[in-house]
Length: 438
Image (tube, rainbow, N blue to C red; front, side, top):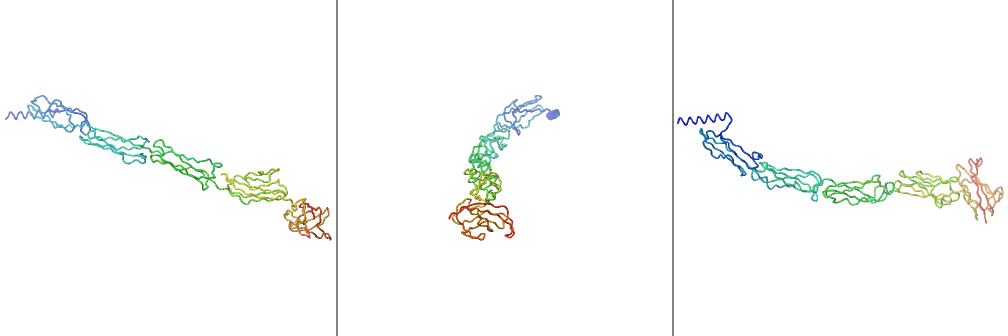
């Protein structure tokens, strides 16, 4: 009994000594590919190291053992020494060589249009793992670039660190199409349209292609310096772009008012009122100058014209046309008869009934003096207040009865200021003649 106790004491002492020097009588090493969370992702070799001194026997302590089974395997080595028995701690070996299986993915939403995505889309992935269990899967997001063969790859990882991936393919186009606008014709004048214009829209898209554009749009007013027609195009992915085509539009003719022609002292003065948007005025006279049928006598931007080429006894027509910057035109016509100072009857006319003598009024005249000569002999002097005198068949002058007999007559007119008693005469207004035939 005393011997057993002595041996046990020696064994305890030996264990204590081994603890002090850091050497264990039974130890082991594991060789394999380490994964995560204490798992191996390959076969594992366990090697036992046993202190040969005082060794009597071992149990479950092969020098090297390869563990191939996936899952969890335990091992424990027991050594008997002359001084006692030592059992190693239980060694747990976890092996998972297999990546997650059945990796699948799904996009987070449906396509935006026609199977295309036009703004960022994410995906979620899932898998199964029968050994160590699934640790997690990635959830990536795609936000470009444009690609008809875009894709998202997802990875699932098990607890041991094995991973497997898969991809999801889809079509992606986030770029709106380019849009152009084209009118169906050129402007009418100086960049302005004055008649309806139709604008068409066209688009281009390099990725998903075009789907549709706004139908041609007709513009017919209102008048605006910056008229606009707006259109858009959409690509197959649902991206839309808009464009506005601007242009000046004026379909309204400028105003032309108060046109008149006045004759004074052998000249014709033509006047008119024009709108502020008038940029050109043209005046055409009929008959024209120097025997022409028609003559453009004025071009410019003014509001008056003086014609010094008129002839007495001719009726003139002045066609006034005004145009705005868009080419809209408005017109009016005025006429004027170029009369002689003494205009009726016309000089040299032959009359068969007593004529009415008419003359141009004199500015400031209070009355007139008309003198009539027959064959060079004065037969009448009278003072009418208006610029006309109706002759009769007979009248008295210089104490004698006068008659409007056949012959050649010449008449003169003076304008007078003041009174009959104290008249102030100016120069003769003119003279003319006519022939009387009974």
